[in-house]
Image 1 (spheres, rainbow, N blue to C red):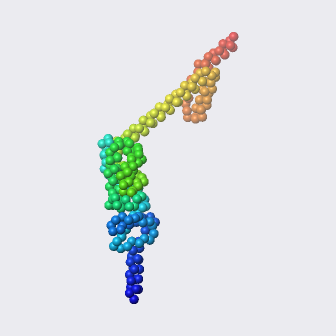
Image 2: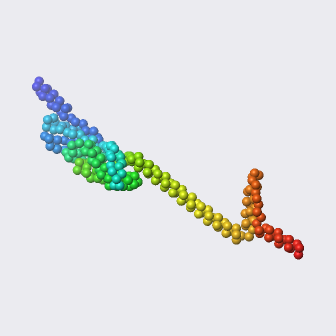
Length: 250
């Protein structure tokens, strides 16, 4: 009878010793408090009292870095936030080397973001956001390498400027647009003047071209009956009539 009791106890111990590790997890196994091995996905036996296991999720995680007040190199106060993506690549280091790697990565990202923003000017921060993000990613990745963590990317989500600075940038952008408009208009006038100069040269050197142009202009004006046209006869025509009169008298 006691054989059945002993068998039941053994089966019960085995059942409570089974631990399931999912595909996206790894298990860090300890034996009497010492690191023993890293367990792969599947069912694993962890004997009570003597052994224990800590499971670690190895999927990519996103850390929302909260808003941070930072001062740029040119002494402009900005409010910046970001999102950081990382994953655990060495499970035993993530358990043995740092108490809470999720919290540690978040705090490290906040301080690093403030430091990097303080190393650049405002214009560089706004125009080269990807470079600043890459710089933060490199620093955090190097600092978390002893923890067995790989930082995949860092993206600056939002950069908020003071109200007075926003108005100043808006005025600067408006002035820049007006400057471009004036330049484009001036370039157009130069091109038009150049074309008119070429046209005048052609009309002056081509016999009868000026008369044809005059007749074309009269035809365009006569299409609208409401127009009143004061026609000035070119001297060339008057001289032509004068020459015809002389020929008849002769």
